[in-house]
Length: 191
Image (cartoon, rainbow, N blue to C red; front, side):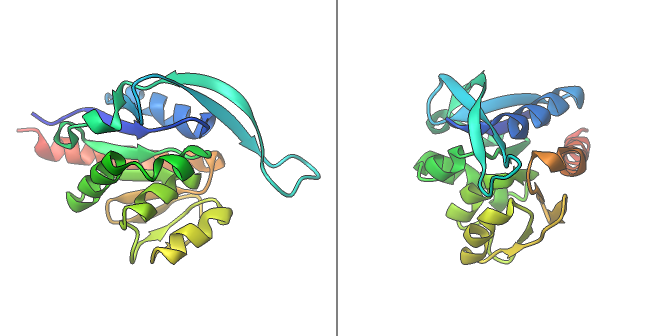
C-alpha cells in the first residue's frame, strides 16, 4: 500500500510561511505531513522579511511547531516524499548525519522532493544538487553553485523529482507542482 506520509524538515528558526503553507496544502491533498527535526520537541519558527530601507533580512519570532519524529528515528521507506523548509534552520541542521542519510535516500529513489529558500543547503550538503537546476533565495545561490547546481531565479523550477522555489512568496507557484508529483507517484503505486 502506498504511503501518504510526507516529511517536512525543520529546526529552530525555520521560516513560518515556508513551513505552514506546504503543511496545510499536504493535508488538503490527502497526505499526512510529518514534521521531522533533530529531536522530537517543540521548535520556534521565525518570520523573515527584508524591511523597507533594509538591505538584509530582518527576523522575528513566528509560531511554534512540534516535531513528530527525530531525524535518527526516520524510516525513509515509510514516506512518499520530503520537503526542505527555509529560514536559518538548514544552515545548522545540515550537519546532522541522519538527515543526510534521509536526504540521499529520496534522491536515490527518485521520489518527490521540494525545497524553498535556505532549504537548498540540506540537499547541497548531501551532495544531491550536482547537475541540478534549482530556485532558491538569491543569497543561497553560492551554496547551490559551489556544490555543482545551477541557480535559476524563477518562482518554480522542476528538475526531475525536484521542485523548488525561491521564498515563501513563491508558495503558490511551486507547491502545486510538487503535490501533483506526489499524487502521480501515489496513483502509480495504487493497485
